[in-house]
Amino acid sequence: MNLPKNVYQLMNYIESKGYKCYLVGGAVRDILSHKKPKDFDFTTDAKPDEIKAMFERHIETGIDFGTITVLFNDEAFEITTFRLEHRYSDGRRPDMVFYSDSLLSDLSRRDFTMNAIALDKDLNVYDYFNGMEDLKNKLLRTIGRAKVRFKEDRLRKLRAVRIACENNYLIHEDIIKSIMSDPDLPGVSSERIKAEFDRIFICEGAKRGVELLFRLHLMRVIIPELDDVVTPGEDMWDDYVKYFEESAPELSLRVYFLLHPLADKCLIKKILERLKYQRIIINQVLALFDYEKLESEEDFINRVAEYTDEILELFLKLDNALGRNPAWRRMIIKFLEYELPRKVVDLDINGNDLKDRGFVREDIGSTLNQLLRLAIKSPEINKKEVLIELVDRIKLGEKL
Image (cartoon, rainbow, N blue to C red; front, side, top):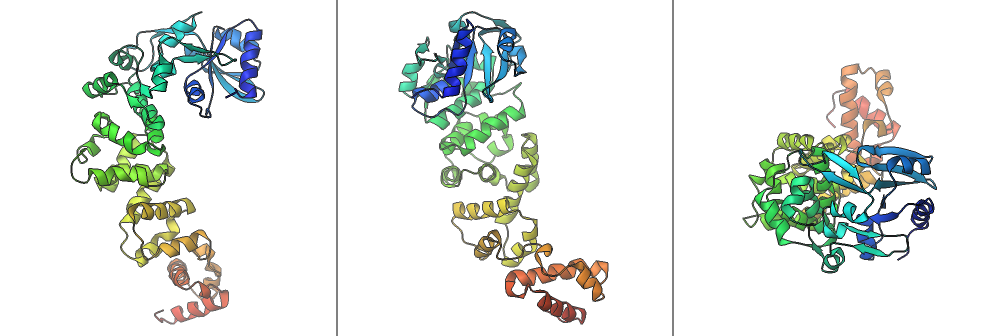
């Protein structure tokens, strides 16, 4: 595999200025696994001020840790100076950072052996911790003792689960024992936990990822309410985890399946807010909760105006995962194909038409909603002359 042109040229440019430059992190792991990298991170012996002097267009995205984002040929890349780190008193970030001239010292501070491999622009490999061997064996192993690495940065516990299930890696016994004996995550923000959760839930190994979160006791720390009602190996466990394998890899859908056993809408909302989920995800998860409990087509019609296209598509995916076929399923498809009116604004009549026929404000909304329900069931009536006729009949007190 060749490096993308921009990546090669960036590395070559830095070297032309008299500095060393290496590709590190997930991109290296992907290249060596014959996968297409998603993004590229670089490490160099150039100090931050020297990096800024090389690139007119730059952003100090992580200047405290030696990281500068540069714009090169209109593409953004993160470049970090070789560094050493000292003490992690908050269990998340180093108290002190020292710049280094050694690639080895920079790689030695990293988390897992396969993340401590570097490549130069000619794809020569620099592997001081047998990361290549672990990559070949698909084995996730820390540099040194897992307990020490996790004490430095407790987010690494979640990263271990995420990297393992994203790439179908085995997890070294030392990592398993270390997390199980101390699953706590003090100092790790809800935003960082959520970011790792999201990647776990939508990857191909999501089922295994959820199993690991429970079996390693991480779920007990992150969502104790869920750990109280879901236990690996007990009744319904297989039914619970299968949805992370069989459902569409939609984040809202997978999050719903994660919290579904709680059967309490207010509690689910509270947990999602605690984990700092975006409002759109919270609304979609709660809509799925309500949708699964609908008992009749009439109930669905009464609520359909609340739903966006994205939510309706999620409903279909939920039904597919649950293997159910509600009476209104074909109706959802027609809504998505715009064959049925969904809101009163979709009617070929409006409030002014009702005012002209003597309706007052308090009756206009209820009448339009009544007409909408009729038009959903019989879309052929959504013509102004037909709706006006129905309005006149409603005014006369007829029951339609």
